[in-house]
Image (cartoon, rainbow, N blue to C red):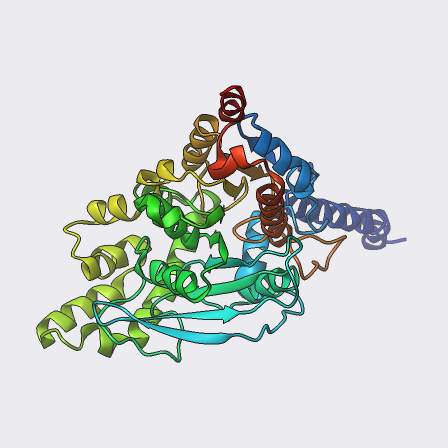
Length: 432
């Protein structure tokens, strides 16, 4: 046998083993990345709750079982806050229903026209009372979004009338009638919708619901004027950030890819603004229009758009002033109706430092419950066995379950507990 043949014989048996080792290493690396990215080793648990021990809170936690039971997201991808957020944002809900409503148009004092969609209940409420959910969607959202349609359909079937605000400028087929669109904390349109509901249904009571940016608006609305809390049974806020001024610094960080999400949301805001460019900029001089649009085209963050465009709608002198005055953190302590604040620990948009606000509030005020889930992303909260999520989310069930518990409490509580008085007030009344 030649030397060349001998070399071939001695080398070839080792080559397959080497390639097998490389394949195993590659597979192991991919699996490790998948496990890390999908957060598969993370445990499931009930929400972390902060609340004061009152009769009302004990009743609510006993009646709304979703708040005390383990939240179990879909096994393969549900522990990733990014995938939960993306699924909510891009894919919507599975088999999204199409509730039938009536669009209402409300003229505003500054010439703007607010719109909301009204959905009547599909059955009697379990208490026999007339209850209306007044709903404020997330940034640039409206009643036609999948997550809103799914929630409205679920609430209707449980006996709730639903009124859903369409953020000013968010509907592509509705023209603006004044040079103004929705902003982070403007409550004018929501207040107009609530006022309409109170006038049209004098016997109805209200459940206030806000998603993301809508959570900021509804909490600010209730806290701005105590008269706004009349006929309001409770408020639920999901996945809001509480303070835009504190959030702006975290939105420029790459941690949890917040800078990337900021860019995507800014791009969406650009499209909304440009779709109404003639209504928003038509009254300006050509030089001012060119300057505003130039800054808009080059903006890569929400803060740049807010500074160059959004704050000017209400005459704020600076971005800091705009964020200070439009954030609910300065008003939420005035809310006295029962308040459920829900956030997710893996929400890529809301930094953990912002959650000190609801934690502190729930520790100080007896009417507040703060629920923090391990998983859920931003407005995701999907449930499901392995791969495919259920149409209804944990979030949908919690809001309706909490609202049902509040309505039941109001129906069966003693007269001395009206207006959410404490147990001590009842004892004093009995001894008089």
